[in-house]
Each structure stands twice: as C-alpha cells, then as structure tokens.
Amino acid sequence: MRKKSLLILLCCLLAVAMLVGCAAETVDAPEETPAVQPEETAAPVETAAPVETDTPEATPEAEAPIEENYPGEGAIIEMFDDMEQRAVDYAPKVITLDNGVRIQRTPNDGGGYFHRPGASASYNTYYLNADNRGCASCHGNLVDLLTTMDYEHLSYENNYGFDMTVLDCLICHTHGEGYVWQMYEFGSLIHGIHSRDTFTGNCMSCHSATENGEGMLLWEEAKYDVLQGIGSVANVQGEFTYDQNVLTDTDDVFFASWMYTSEDYKRNGAAMADVPLDEELFNNWTISVTGCVDNPFTITLAELIAQAPSEKQIVTNQCVMNSNGGPYIANVEITGIPISWLLEKAGVQDSAKAFMSRDHADWARGSLLSVTEQFGSYLVYEINGQRLPWGQGYPLTTYNPGTAAPSFIRRVCEIEVVDTEDIKIFDGWYTADGTPFNKPNAGFYYFSEGQIIEAGKPYTFEGFAHAFDKQIIAMEFSLDRGATWTRFDTSDSDLSKWIYWYFTYTPEDPGAYVISVRAETADGMITTLPDEVMFNAE
Image 1 (cartoon, rainbow, N blue to C red):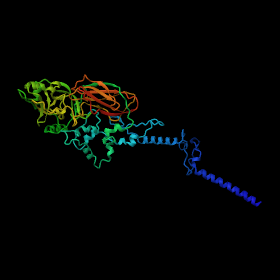
Image 2: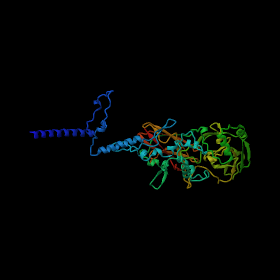
Image 3: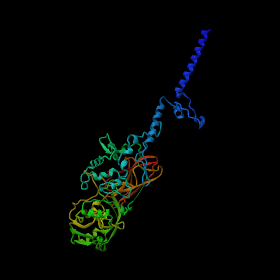
Image 4: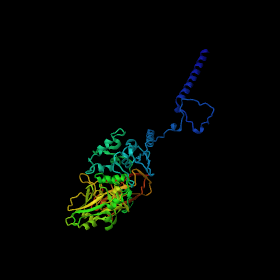
C-alpha cells in the first residue's frame, strides 16, 4: 500500500514539473503570444507603477503575417519596403530660388517594377550621388561666383535670367586665341583652383567616368546620358512665335570689360567708379576720316550731330565669344550717324575696299564696305534714347551690324579707309579645325535647370537666336535629345536683329524632360551645340 502511494505522489510531482516547464517556455517565446488589439487594452491607472517585463510589446505590424502568393514573396516585399524608405531618405533636393521658382536638378528615377509600379531604386541620388555633383551643387549660381571672385573676371550679370553652367566657360578657355594667354588650359586652371584645402570633394564631384572611350567628362556634359527617369517625347508639338523688337535695357547691355589698351582702362575705370558723364568731353570729342579718300577731315562730335543726319535703328550686338545661349548679346535701338555719310563727305576712292575703326590707343577693327552697304554702319552716341554709358564707349562707338562685338570700336576717334579686304572680320567663334562654337547661336532665357512646372498646363519657354551675318530661317525644338526636331519657319526675319522666340508646350505627363533648341541659317548652318535644359513636370 505504501509503495502504491509513493508511486501516485511521484506521478503528481512529474505532472507539476511538466506544467511549470510549459509555462516557462511560453514566457521565453513572445512570438507565440496572441497580439493584444489596441481597442482591447485597458486604460492605465495613473497611480499604478509600471510593470517591468522583458517581453516586447506586440504590435499589429510586427505580428501581422505577410500574405504570400508564392514561397519567399515576403522577402521580396521587404526588399521593396527598404527601397521605398531609401527613396524617402535620399529624395532629390528641391530648392526654392530667390524669385520663388522651385527647381529640382536631379530627376526622380521612377522604377516601374512589376510588383510596386513607380517604386524608386534611388539610382540617381543614392548610387550616382547626382545632387552632390556638378558646379551648381557647391556654388549654386555661377554668375554670382564670377562677380564675387578675387580676380576681376568678365561680368556675366544680366537681366535675361541666364542660367550659367561650366559649359559656358569652355568657349573662352579652350580655343581662345588672341583673348586668353593660354589655350586649352581650362582643365589645368580649374583643377588648380580646386586643389586648395577648401575643396572637400573628389574627382566624381565634377566628372563622370565613362567606358565608351571618352574618359572623364564634365558632369554637365554627361549627366543627361547617365541620369535615369528622363522622359522622351518624339516630334514635340507646341505654339511658336518670335519678336525681333524685344529690346535690352541700357543698363543690361553686356559689359565686356576687356583691358587691352589705355582707352579700355579709361572707360572701365569710369564705369566701375560711377563717374558722371562729361558733357564737355562729348561736345569736344573729334572724329577723323582718313586713308583712301579725296578729302580727309576732322570734326567734333557736336558739329557732326549738327551737320549729319541721325538715324535710329534696332541692331543686335553679340560678343564673338558668346557661349551657346549666353548673355553676351544685346538688341538695342541705336541713334547714330551713318558712316556712309562720312565716307561720301570725304570722297571714297575707287581702290577702297574696307574701313578700320580706331581708338586713341590705336586699337582698330574693320568692316568691308560691301558689308556696310548691306547692313549699314554707324557712329553711335545713344542707345535706347540715352547717352552711351562709359562701359559702352562713351562718348562714341562704332556699330557694324553683320559683324561681332570686336568690330564695335568703343571711344572711336578715326575711320581709316583702306584698299585691302585682308582685314580681320569677326562673325562668330570657331574651333581650331573651323567648327563654329556659336554660329548660329540659340538658347533659353528666364529658365533654370531643373525648374518645376505644372503637368497638363501650357508653359512658354523663351530665348534668342542670332547668327551675326547670317539670316536665321528656322528654329527647331526637340524633347528626345535630338532624335527628332520640330521646325518653325523664320524666313521672313531681319538678319540684323536677333530672333526672340517663344515656344509654348504642354507636358501631358508628370516627369523629367530635357528640351533642346537650335537654329538654322539661310545657307544651311545649324547650331553645333544645341542649348539644353531639364525641367520637371508635376
């Protein structure tokens, strides 16, 4: 009997031990604890002390099982969740400019994955690090940079809303014969500047490495080819108009502050110091007509204005080294004396072929008499009804439509008629092999790289085109990086004035796009490097 009682007791103890073990196992495995729904949680008592426990609080998100249509789909879903979080953490920067315009220089890369349409891989921002590449990522506005740099650089300040990039620097700092001390030195110059301790970037901050044999390109040269998410529209459609009488404000006429002669120092110094215009200098300024003429003479500016007919014309003046879409161009109404009147008064000889405009420091540039006959040439003392500013050559400058700005001699004091056509004529800028940099020139104004516009609503782009001595007969636009071009006729244009164009386009779908513009001349020249700008439609 005693043995039987002991056996029953042992069985009871074993059962208790098994129950205790099961309870301990339940505490150590919270994942098997049923989730407590929030609405079922009792309201806490404010005076009650919190109960400490090692068991994490269960949540619906943590406990809800992932519904899988196939084994392992949960891992795929987690992958996309990670991608979407990375897209939030590395979203492209959106910047609001001082004028209220919003820009996003790096496009959303989209994705289009079958499981999560529109899911982003953050390729542009996370992998390419595009928001931190290119000059604008550090400097923002390059025009302001040039204005505030230690060296007195040519000013790019303008009223055209010109969005400068490093590509605008290349036209002067590559094949700049006669204008820069060393040609093809831009790379050495910029690398030298950025080798200082103040630069914290690396090679990829400025460049894009390629595998196509082109090596290290500037980021601005390569970015549209490597960024993902840029849309394409073939044969873009829109409304086009142009106006050749859009005038540049006098204060905004480009100020090419070259300093080659003593006359340059005089005009630039007076402009920089805001010296008041000198009326006595204006009245007593003299102009001489010499060379291959029967009756050379000298006359004061006051006498010339009193005796000669004055004419008003709208004329375009473009710097020979203006970059594609650059700001070194002005369309103004000039008031001046036709040089043809002076030549007739002096009696031009039959051997005459051209004339040279010269300042007191013997700086001279010429124009063919045949070009003068076609376009007209003027001794200009007013632009837009105001006396010339110092920087524009007060009190008198030459305007030679059909040529570039170097032939517009400031502070001109002599017109010398010559019997040769072997003179330097500026009608655009060319590479060493003769390829035109900027003829015909065309570009966008009042638009910033990455600017955000509304999808589904028309937006009017605007800008200019000009080809020096050539008539522009057509403007063309592309929204697929030049694969197709939409052409608009301008064959009735006046070649002595710029074409100020307007192109209205409605982006139907949200996304990033690159719009390109180029021009064509009557003799078949087409813009070598079309101006391009990216925009975002939202």
